[in-house]
Image 1 (cartoon, rainbow, N blue to C red):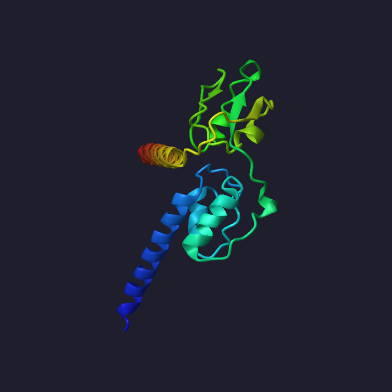
Image 2 (image 1 turned 120 degrees about the vertical axis):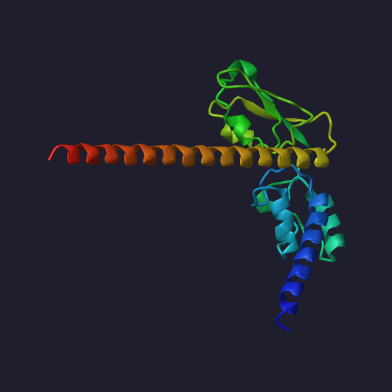
Length: 206
């Protein structure tokens, strides 16, 4: 009986993982955070854990219907507190007003904005998921959300782009932490060497 508990837990975790992956495949992958979670994957995991499945404005009624069928749950009305379902939009940067602060680039969850510091930025329409997270990030209010000509949701592409971004940021954090530890060790070594020199000087001058 003692050994069966980890096995049962593992089986339960595998079932939850399988369900969350199926849910994630239905979500639109805009990574907009309107559902209250940091990304679509996190919301999928929350739904698999029992959270209500009507929190995704970009998905709207269609996604709610699909999730209800998958999970054998009631078809709910979209939670209005998270926003309303709208046609797909894409961000547009008024480049003559852009100051090149890169804040929109940092805010974009799918790396759809290109540019460098103090240079104008631009949005790649196909890559843009229409999440709108770049709009409040812009300090000069030079970003508009316009109706997309292409109303198809590039969900798989956006999911892959978001995952690549998360991996890139994680690698950057690891390198930053590694450099911080190296700098700290160098500082400690410098202090230790200075203390040793001071002791040697003291012992040579009684």
